[in-house]
Each structure stands twice: as structure tokens, then as C-alpha cells.
Amino acid sequence: MIKVTYINHSGFLVEMEDAYFLFDYYKGDFPQWDRQKKMFVFVSHAHYDHFGKEIFGLADVFEEIHFILSSDIDADAYRKYNRICSAAPGQTLDVSGVSVRTLRSNDEGVAYLVHYRGKTIYHAGDLNWWHWEGEPERFNKLMRRSYQSEINKLREEKIDAAFVPVDPRLGEQYCLGLDCFMRRTDTKAVFPMHFWENYEIFERLMLESCTDEYRDRIMKIEREGQTFLLES
Image (tube, rainbow, N blue to C red; front, side, top):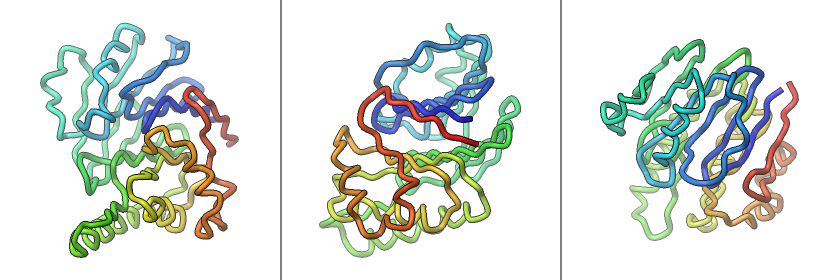
């Protein structure tokens, strides 16, 4: 079983039997920790809303902790915390028994695909179909092509939980990335994220005709600290 806790924005905590996986924390409350578990902390890129320095305080909580930082972050600046790993786009890393694969973000940094004990977790960071109204057609076409190219690399994966942006600032194009992802991957449960505390986005998703085929796999987030139990 996988337990998922929504923290804030793009920040999520995934809990398994003997390990925690914390993604893109920048603010919000932590749960009570089981200090006997291993902790793996992922940062997809250096933007303030994905990289809260408070994460390094967890080094005082867990006996075994690993920080996986995207390569656009100066990992040397945080070497004092030990167990710092720098992750560049297109890499596959083994971090204490956790297989970490990275995709290249079309914004900054990386997206993470994590394999552990037969489970697969995907966190997009800021890899998304960024179609901005008012941008030149050439730019939006580049965003579409770069996004689709990266998502196509996940076609052979069976993903248990995925975290994918649905940014309301994109207007009517807010769900292009989610729709593309769900149609091109085998994903059991998807958690929309990066919605800037606009929880109404979930009602919109439920009404979109494009979500008909996978609506039952969209996890509806209603508040910070909400938890979800995903069956095997």
C-alpha cells in the first residue's frame, strides 16, 4: 500500500512500508514522522515554489536521509548535510536501493521517475505542456513537442502514482499536459498539482470531456494535509 499526503502546491509526501519520499516541498506542515524509516527528498528545480530550504532540517530527524537535487541547483552548497545527489536530465541513478530516472523539464530542472519495491512514482516538477496565451505560436509548438517527447519515454512504465501540473494560469489550456500524460501512460492514480491553491480546478477537471476515460483515476485534493491510500 502507498500513502500519499498533499502538503502544498507541488509538494507531496509518499509513504511506503520502510521509506518516505518527499517531493518539491516549499511550504506547509509535515506529518508526525516515523524516524525509523528512510527518507528520500527530491527537488525538481531551483524555483522558490519547489525548493524550500527547510527540507535540510530533516537531516536532524532521520538517521538515513538522502537529498536528490536537480543539477540546476548547486549541490556543493549543501554538502555539509551529506548524502547529497545531483540529478541531471536523462540519468538513471541508484540511491540506496531506490532507482531514480530523470526526464528533461521544458522549464527548469528535471522530472523524476522513482522505482522502489515494485512501486513506481512519477513527479513532473515543472515538465508540462506550457501553452501560454499571447506567446508566439513557435514557442507554444516547442513546448508541445518537447513535452510529448519526454512523456513518450514513459510508455513502457506502469505508474502507481503520478503528480502532474494543472496550472490555472494557462487558461483553457490548463489540462493539456494532464490529458496527454494520462492518454500516453499506464497510470493508476494521478494527482493534479501546481494549481496555486485554486481547488476549484478539480471541479473543472471533472467536467472536461477529455477526462471521461480516466476521471476515476484523478485524485481530488480538497485541503492541505489530505491523505490518500492507494491499494496495490
